[in-house]
Amino acid sequence: MKIIGITGQSGSGKSYLAKTFEKLGYIHANADKIYHELLLTNAKLRCELVSTFGKEIEKDGTIDRKTLARKVFGKKNSRKLLKLNKIAHKYVCREYIKLIMSLKGQNAKGLVIDAPLLIEARLHKLCDINIYVYCDKELRIERIMSRDGISRKEAELRVCSQKDALYYMKNCDTVFFGDGYIPATDFATDIDKKLHGETDIEQTF
Image 1 (cartoon, rainbow, N blue to C red):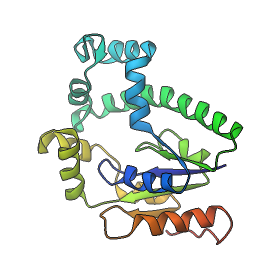
Image 2 (cartoon, rainbow, N blue to C red):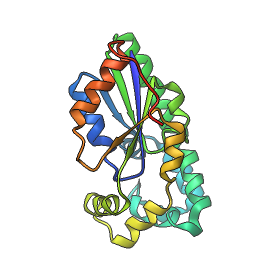
Image 3 (tube, one colour):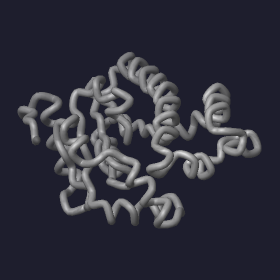
Image 4 (cartoon, rainbow, N blue to C red):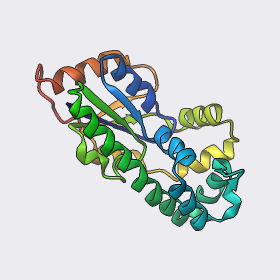
């Protein structure tokens, strides 16, 4: 089974590319979705978050993600964001390990790990190839505002809290431009062929 890592800043188009691989027969596992599901189902995670960030992030027995986001995003809150990521990584990585083991038992074609913090969580070490999805900052801000229903200021705080392009380029094998100009199907098909030995994988950077 081949494992593909897809990472990049929020709003870059990671899930769009991941869904293209899904059409080629890969299982798509989105880290954000796994985390959001765990917030609903894992009491230990919720307790750890409340203990770290305060009771005000909990509402009706669930985590208020917008309240939590306001606490951790922004330059002044960088340490809080690191704490959040450290807690989340622990639980999300366990779910990925479980999924990988189950898929190997099913002899699946492959898995796409779609994760903004793929490298920070060291999940990229599990992958056969790691792809950085690049997108212009302004377009990312617009996408985040539309997707999450938040203000421009809140979207900018999220963008500014993330690593720059050079960080991803140093840690990934190749790049996909998520602005819509390069066909995702052609890119994904080419990667699929390389992973299955039809052509050689070459370093892009």
